[in-house]
Picture (tube, rainbow, N blue to C red):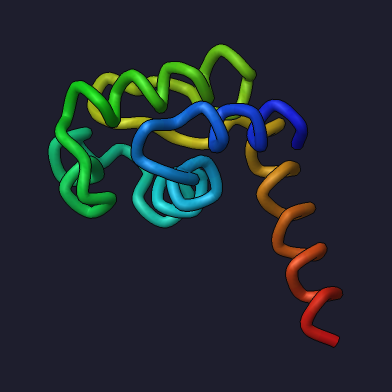
Length: 88
């Protein structure tokens, strides 16, 4: 989670890691052009960001699009649990 925080803080377009993980989780194997538009980013910027998640072992590239790796799924589930606990 610290790496995600660092990635978010270093970004010129604001926090993006959680949104990207959620988006890929909901839309596996969707072309990057569509995902980038959903996030309001240009495709090259989006792909660079996703490459950073891949280097962290959180996503996997498919022939078309991406999916969460098992590690990415566990992390996203953990983030969702933390968020749910905060709402109690």
